[in-house]
Amino acid sequence: MPCFALVDCNSFYASCERVFVPALAGRPIVVLSNNDGCVVSRSAEAKAAGIPMGRPAFQCRELFVRHDVAVFSSNYALYGDLSARVMATLARFAPALEVYSIDEAFLDLAGLPGDVAAYAHRIRETVGAWTGIPVSIGIGPTKTLAKVANRIAKKDPAHDGVFDFAACPDPDAVLARFPIEDVWGIGRRHAAMLARHGVFTAGRFCELPRDFVRKRMTVGGVHTQLELQGRSCLELETAAPARKSVVSSRSFGQPVVEASEMREALAMHVTRAAQRLRACGLVANGVTAWVQTNTFVKGAPQYSGSAFAALPAATAHTGDILRVALTVLKTLFRPGYRYKKVGVMLSGLEKIGSRQLSLLAPAPERDAKGERLMAAMDAINARFGRDAVRLAACGIEQPWQMRQAARSPRYTTVWDELPTARA
Image (cartoon, rainbow, N blue to C red; front, side):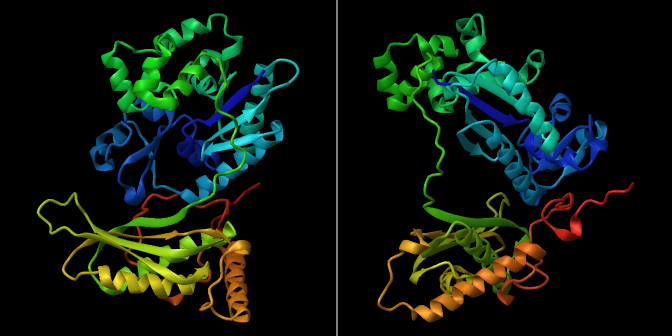
């Protein structure tokens, strides 16, 4: 019989901030979005203090002071590295693992001898001891029921972070109390439609005629209903789907009005996107660039634009991509506007070993030389820290970089920011 476990990190970004600062234990923590804009992660203490998710930080300042909240800028380097450590730890406990998001993973526990819940407690304790990240685990015969179980494990302290749906004495009663809008696969639009038909819980949804569900929610809704009824329709996706594009974009820390600064920012985003391409063993055939002003500034002139250009040959060479991207930017940039964002998307991705070559492509020896250069740059940056070596086009001072006034150190990925242990 299938047996899935969904492991979900509790308040992941906030939990990451606690790993290297034990003094934060028990203190409310919030993490802000890019440019320190909105609240995107809250510890349990911050939720109890009434700090809303998604609320702009400037509207929460009084709450931050009143409840002595520790406020952090987003530290994606730290979060990504700790996520990788959590996933590597989880992989030791199951023959198959699906990384669902940065803080969630499904495990295949089918055929496991003994008490599955006890095994899940062992997983939870090991992840906490090895990474410092607290997790909640939901177990069920389907992925959707594992999601339901995970939510119960996280919300009800009586379960000590683990809930096994299959071992529940009255599963129908659990579904009868579970809100339909919290069911995995039921979006806001479908939840509103079901509410109009008097369906407010997962239990009531399970009782709906199959034809009704198929007509109004297509086959995806049918799969969700079958999964809630205990019939597994969704298998573990152990192989990540092939990427169709790579995007890099961030809002500026301050409005950009000069074309030179816009070119620097675009060059940095091309650098980031090309690095990701090479890390995945991919090459791109086309590049799209876009610019945008701040639509939230009332009365200010607004403009946004985007354009695509094909690359002469499929490549992951930063310089080759940048030359085309800067040509695209020249057609987009208009003086007189205060720009908020620039971004780049690389598309037409192929595996580097199976890419289709062009008769007009550079000679193989020149192409190989460029690949060696990019490999050397990546190796240097991996050893000495991000942007230890970069193209001059990315600029030096970079005044347009996003605001991160309260960013914690990148403890695990930057040599100069490693934590110091004192004995």
